[in-house]
Structures are given as structure tokens and as C-alpha cells.
Amino acid sequence: MAKRFGLFLVACFLSLSFVNSPLVGTYIQSLKTGAQAVSKQKDPLYERILAEAKDKGFPAEDARIDKVWKAMPGYNGLEVDIPASYRKMKASGKYDPKKLVYKEVKPKVHLGQLPPAPTFRGSPSKPMVSFAVNVAWGNEYLPDMLAVMKRHNVSASFFLEGNWVKKNPELAKMIATAGHEIGNHSYSHADMKRVSREKALDELRKTNEVIEATTGSKCAWFAPPSGSMGPETTAIAAEAGMRTLMWTVDTVDWQKPSPETIINRVSSKVSNGSIILMHPTEPTVIALERLIISIKEKKLKIGTVSDMLSESRVEVFE
Image 1: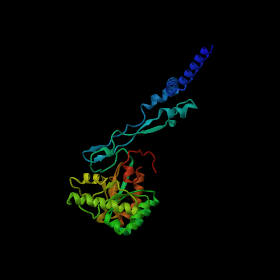
Image 2: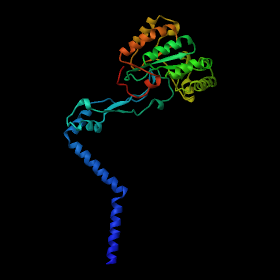
Image 3: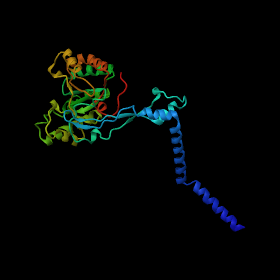
Image 4: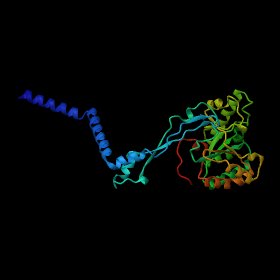
């Protein structure tokens, strides 16, 4: 009798161990998940969402090296989130295209994976542009430029010369405190096509150091002075931890054209992914407000270079 009772206790113990086993729990959960999936597939609403999802959304775009524009960023795709859409419509039991939930899908190739090459523009599919402001002079116009951008809730990328930052730390801090992106514009406005590799690397590193010490910002982008590049410039910038930025639309504002000329130059060429080069000049400041308004009227968002060149989608316009 005692022996039978002992066997009974052992059997009970083994049964409890089996039931509480993580493997058994996983198996049971998989059965539940499978049952739910089968249940949804038999649900006409779920099947309708599944069918409609095939024709909606956009594929992701991989970053690539373009023959004309060189290093081009990727852009997230968009697809229907079927489970989330089903949950949103389940209560009513009716298909409603307005209740479809979307999710972003990342590309397979990213900008950071491309070999060093200059970037002249963003994705032509992204309705966004950037102001790239090169600063080595024009101190008297910077406060007004920042005021206009603040008034219109616009963020830009300011590429600062290292020597200028050393001489004007308060202005550099003002730009950074206003929420704008800070980039590297060399230390002494050096011609990257003419200086040695060692000199170029020193120019970039010294500028990064003085910018970080003054503003706390780490530079992700280098804008070569006058757009002059040697065969190793992009590789040197990469060694200093940055990618190289050029431009799509040039205001040529350093020649002091009329504000109307600046507006016409930009408005006639600006489109998705444009990088607009400018400097702190009097005609630029006068033109800036109308320029911002005209760009927004084209349903284009204005943001920093890093935001514009990111893979994140832009769907909402101001």
C-alpha cells in the first residue's frame, strides 16, 4: 500500500513538472497564437484588411551612389500594420479605410553604409528641404536671421568656421541654443583641393574640437569651403567622423544680389530633398521670410540637414 502511494506521489510530481515546464508553456502559447491567426483568417474583416493592404503603402528606398548626386540617402517605406488595423476596426466589425494603421519599413541599405562620397541632395521622395548656412563672417546679420527662423519655427544647419567660433563664441552658442544643427566648415576656410592630407585632417579636427568645447555640439557633417574638394576630401572627413555635404540650390548671396533675385533663384529650383546654400548677408536676411513662406506654399517642410537626410518619412505639412 505504501509503495503504491509513493508511486502516486512521484506521478503527481512529474505531472506538475511537465505542466510547469517552459517548453510546454511555449508550446501552449504557440497553439493559442495559431488558433488566433486561424480565427482572424476566417474573419471576413481580417481577410478584407489583408487584401486591401496589398495595394497600399510604398516600398522603402535604399541609399545609393548616384551618378549625378553622389551619396543619396534612403527613405523609409510604408505598409499597412494588419494586426493594429484589425484591432481598430474589430469593435464595429466593418472595414473602414480611414482606420487603417500604417508603419514605416526601413531600407536595407543606409547612408552610413555607403563609401565616402559627397551628398548633394536628399531623397526626391521626401517633401523636405534644408538651409545650409556657411558662417565665417556676417556677424551683424546672424541675430536677425535667427529671429526670422524662430518666428517661422524653422531649424537650419549652420556650418561654422573653427577660427570664427574661437573669435565669436557667444554667437556660436546663440545658434546652438536656438536649436539649429552645427556643422564643420574647416578651421581657416582652407581650400581642400590644395592643402595636404595632414593639413586637411588638422583643419577638420581642430574645428570639431572648438565647436564641441564652445557649444557642446558634435559635428556630423563637413561643408568644404567654396565647395572645393580634393580626391581624398570625403575620406578625410570620414576619418574625422563626418560625411561631406554639398548643395542642390545656391543662392549665390555672397555676391550681394537683390532679395528678389535670391527668392527667384531658390523658388525656381527648390524641390524634394533640396539643400539650399546661403550665408549671413543683408539680402539673405531681407529675403528669408518670403523665402520660407514660398517654400512652405510648395508643401515642403524645412528642417536640419540631418533630419532631411534621415530615412524617417514626412507626411504632415505645416
